[in-house]
Image 1: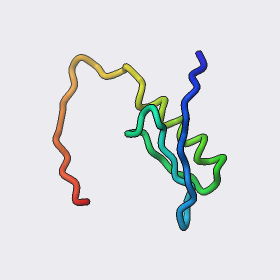
Image 2: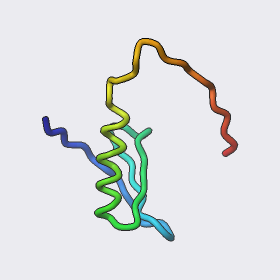
Image 3: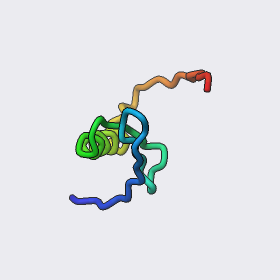
Image 4: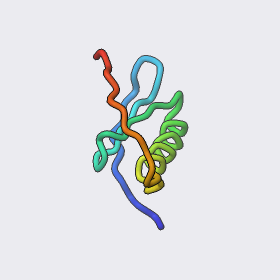
Length: 65
């Protein structure tokens, strides 16, 4: 099945950075635009998988921003 999504992207000092407009929580980077696109495909596939087992745990993660 093919899905078409829109990726907003830009060049930072070292990397190409992108995020999906339909899923803004999916964001990644790459050294080249081609690598960014490949990483984005991988990130999307990981994020949309429905393979969380019935027996799972949840842990809060504190981040300093």
